[in-house]
Length: 125
Image 1 (tube, one colour):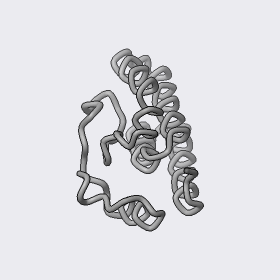
Image 2 (cartoon, rainbow, N blue to C red):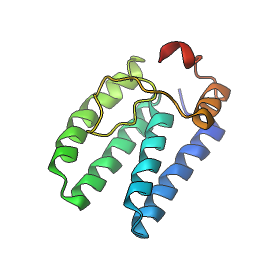
Image 3 (cartoon, rainbow, N blue to C red):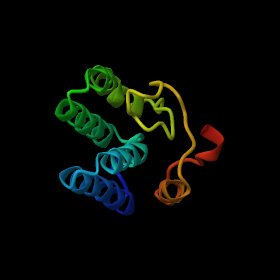
Image 4 (cartoon, rainbow, N blue to C red):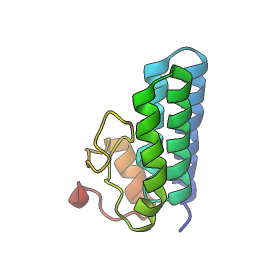
């Protein structure tokens, strides 16, 4: 199932903001936007894999071996996890968190996800 248009727009906005922040040297802010894009993408295999590839690239540019290895594993399981509905909701997607650890979803993202037809998220955390 494709991303609903408002959700897709929010996802793309997070990716644009991540790129702009990184370009401006705001690395923590750039990473936060990638994490938010990850949360929005988890139910959609293509966007989910795309975010992990972008996180891999971020790790590559920082020469962060831990992030690179973590993202390689996540790239491999992101698609099947999304297709099977097994992605841990709210997980921010970085190597600094467990690959299967559900996490609280920021309220603004929860509203977007629920409005786009995703199942109630509070019961799946």
